[in-house]
Amino acid sequence: MRSFESRKAQRGAVVVLVAIAMGTLILMAGLALDMGHAFLNKTRLQNTVDAAALAAAKRLDETGGNTSEAIQEARDAFTRNAASAGNRELSLAYGGGAGNLNVVVEFSATLPPFQSGAPNGPYVRVRATGFVMPAWLVRVGGIFQKTVAATAVAGPRTLNAGSNVCNLTPMMVCGNRGGPGMWGYEQNSAVVLKNGAPGGNNPVGPGNFQLIRIGGPGGSVLRENMAGSYNACLSGGTTILTEPGGDTGPVSQGLNTRFGQYRGPVDMTTYPPDVIVRDQSPAVHAEPRNPRDLSQGYDVYQNNTRITPANIESLLYDYAEYQRDLMNPANYDYQPLTEGGTGAYGRRLVAVPVGDCSGTVNGYGSVPLLGFACFFLLQPLPNGGGNESFVFGQFVGNCTVNGTPGPDPTAGFGPHIIQLYDDPTSNDS
Image (cartoon, rainbow, N blue to C red; front, side, top):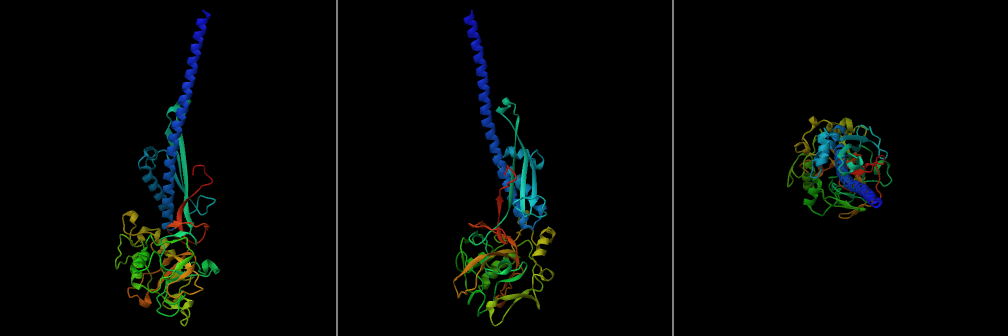
């Protein structure tokens, strides 16, 4: 009798143990399945937030710090990516901003640290919180939902000598390695980017008009590069190859696309105009600092007044006014492509190499590369060419290009890329 009762008790204990083991197995399987589900959606959310931050930082850069447009671009980019294949749960959670998932866009003037509240960036942080997903098998353990979040920071990174820099305009300016400011250039100064004086000496050397060779010789390559070819790159080099001759036809045909003027084998579809093409009235012109020695360079004049950083804003349509106009689409000459128009932001901003011209070059040759600088194009080239084919730019702090930083990236003035940064204040980046 006792043996029977003992066996019955053992069977009861086994049932309990099996039930506990099954519950544990289900909980472990549930943890693996639900944690994998959460990790997959966390990755999808992070990718979407990364795309939103990059899009917002790019729009902020294009519009000269318009945070309203950057916020809208971040939300649009988030919506587009959330709606892509495989993101059904994310799309439902966001619901175009009407769901439980909350997206916040913030701006900072510094990095690090990211200090939210800057009026126009340039750094952007996008935070997504409240992405709630139902639990499956872990309900056995009393866990009924999972919540994930993500954050991303994006903004500019300056490219210097040794970097791979693309979208360069095939012109160069001469700089002083130890000069004041940026190789001797003062912010907002008016500069000759390409001279048109025939014969004699010039800052680069006899036969050179400040043109450089990128991607090969010939007028067709020069025209495409002047128009804004994405293949116009210097890859980690330390020298600039000069391109002798004026090539006024290809130069004007390419560069003037940025002002909505099309002559020769260039078209608006490939090379759209800037959204604002207003230039100078009357036009500016160049006068040599020393008519007997053109190697001393040129100053920029409007009528009889020399343009300086102190008077450029009062006399010319300059970069500051251009940035103000970008804040109001009613001022645009061409509506942007992103809004169904034919214009593009920033086409009047060009990046050019800065060379050490202390040793002049006769014809083809190389000039030591000091770095890169950004200029706002002041006016198109006249159709006549010849002695009038000077290209004028206003020295500005930054412009956007494509490329990758070199081994020793630095912060400061010059062309930059838009990239993602770690957010050290968050575990969700």
